[in-house]
Amino acid sequence: MTMQTEAQAVSVPRKRRGTELSLIVVALLVGVGAYVSVGLGYTGDIPADITAVAGAFAALAFVAHLAVRFLAPYADPVLLPLVVLLNGIGLAMIYRLDLDITDPRLGDGVARQQVVWTFVGVLAIVAVLAVVRDHRRLQSYTYTLGLVALGLLVLPLLPGIGNEINGARIWISVGPLSFQPGEVAKLCLVVFFAGYLVVKRDALALAGRRFIGIDLPRGRDLGPILAAWLLSLGVLVFQRDLGSSLLFFGLFVVLLYVATERVGWAIVGILLFLGGAYFGYLTFGHVQNRVAGWLDPFSDTDLYFQIVQGQYGLAFGGLIGTGLGQGDPTLTPYSYSDFIVTSLGEELGLAGLMALIVIYALIVERGLRVALLCRDAFGKLIATGLAVTFALQVFVVVGGVTRLIPLTGLTTPFLSYGGSSLVANWAMVGLLLRISHATRQPQPLATPLHAEDATQVVRLR
Image 1 (cartoon, rainbow, N blue to C red):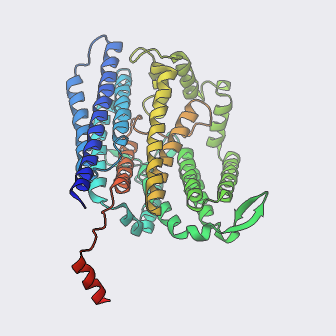
Image 2 (image 1 turned 90 degrees about the vertical axis):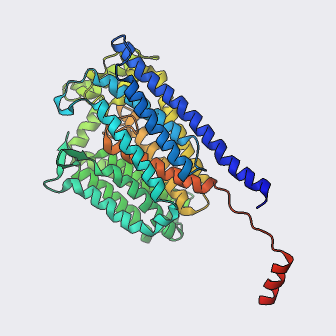
Image 3 (image 1 turned 180 degrees about the vertical axis):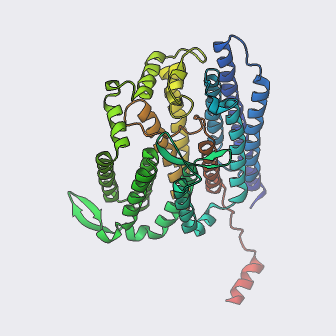
């Protein structure tokens, strides 16, 4: 490598780090500004703890930036600032809701707890970048991570530690701590699906019968998609978790289509999804309630009180919103978790809500760009799976609270209150940054042989 080439290679990560740092500063200004706006809108004064909160959040953001700078200098410079921006807006909105929430089960409030979980999330991204130095090594743990994911999904069903909340058995309790293992399971499943499909894609890509111009898969190859279908149905049946069921199966179908490039697999996946949805509707009362609340929530305003209040909140916000701290989002139950989108829609309006969706779209776009540029098939599928996971989760959440689809109960990534979701999503971004670093890192140039070396090679031959 020549001296000029070496200088160019060094300058590239410096430029990216400078871009990332500048964007993080902008994200911090928006998040802290939103926090201050909440205080001014609610009480007319700047929050008394603004210095401590802003200092802690800025310190965490810079720690994450330093981790990326030293552990993955060639990583995408836009991903981390987007995550910091969403996390800051979510923290400001949770603080605003905290001013009106009087639920004694939440202790000293959800805002302080969210700051603590943000700290753990930053530790998670640092740990992922420090431990996973080469994402390709994860392929050797394909089936191990698959078993870990299965074990995490089974944990809430075990007596003694499993805990049922709001009809869904997706929590485990160990002493005073509660945790949702399904959030970590989705990361393990992404790696498992990617590792499995890399090995089996040639067999799965073989065409079977041709129907209406579409090559359908062979019958002998239907086992994997049927297994994923049964797994998603098991989550729906035993845990009563409609959102995770949809997320897991949708993720596998998308990765199967990307790996094989066969439209037939997508068609089979859609048919299995429709069949499972219809089976769930006929069999389970909670699914029937979700569908009825989707079609006509005003038929029983007591039963579907949460959906109705969310609709009123969005309508009250209108185009530009009431302003931070000046609405009544806490009239909607669980406004800080499942329905934080309606809370933001009420006080930021349709314009603010669309801006948040654009931020999520940018995260998905950057993730898919990493997948397109990735040189190895395993990393390509992992990056695709992580991006699709974010996309599906946001679609399911926003679609549910706006009545585009039935309500499912997933959390909004980086915005909703909840330690399990926040930590898992930070870890997912860490893995995406690791793959991005490997993708953007320049390959070493081949050094030409000197005449003496070439002569020695010829003699050896």
